[in-house]
Structure formats: C-alpha cells, structure tokens
Length: 66
Image (tube, rainbow, N blue to C red; front, side):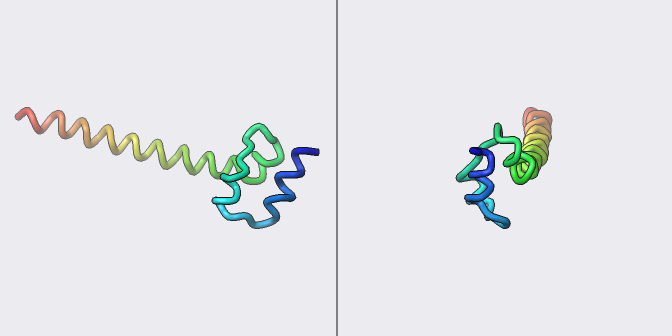
C-alpha cells in the first residue's frame, strides 16, 4: 500500500525537485520508476568530476615543484 502512495503522490511527470522531496530508494516501485535513473546520473556525474579533480591535482603536484 505504501509503495503506491508515493507514486500516486508524484503523478505521471514529476519534476526532479518533487522526486527528491519524496525520495524512497527502498521502495521498489519508486526505484524502478524514478530512483534508478537519478542515481545513475548522479553516479556518472560524480565519477567524472572526481576523475577530473584527480587529474588536475596530479598535474599541479607534478608541475608546481619544478
């Protein structure tokens, strides 16, 4: 019953803000409908950001002491 309450509350086309306000990753119906897509986007973005940060740090640590 609780699984459907969140989906009914959000409706067919909720905004990202509405989805995050009612975030329930343990709810399988919610996860399959909205959560998985947002989590994957966050994972890809954070992975690229951390990789870029490491590259910049490595370059700075290599070039600065010279």
